Image (cartoon, rainbow, N blue to C red; front, side, top):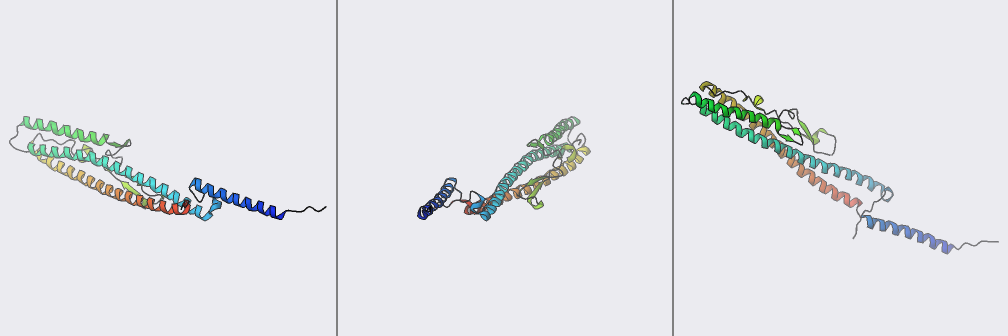
Length: 238
């Protein structure tokens, strides 16, 4: 007995299977929005796309890191603005105390305010924080790194360094304006402290500018890399 094969039916069934499979893939691409849903769709394209995705996510976080760095710098600079203001007032008082027309009682009253300002400078230095990290008590003296890139490379880190800024370090904790000569010496010490704070604020300003330029560049790279990755992976709905 000879069993006959219906070749036309078999061929039609095979073609139907191919068509169904093809339609399934098209439907998947349309529903997911991606033309690459598995490695088999485009092995090389998937590799490139995943590498780009990793870079995009890393750079997006790096931009957020840099923004945190800006906020940190602004917090420190704001506190130093107050320190500057207090030092300027101390200098004003020292100049006043250095005048020969002052009585002992006058200088004692001036000394009281000078001492209070020195204590406040130290309090600000010890209490200024960003994300629970002390900024002006010497904790940042060795530098804190801001990761501003997606790779583990030195050039992808920006260091924030902030010297200790309490009254002792600035040399104004124990200044005395109770005598004319003491007030004269105090002027020199306070002037030096003002210059020191000015230098630190200037350094912080430079770091902030650097970070802001870095953020702009990172956001630009993310935008363009995202567009390139989309060309590789996203479904063309046209």
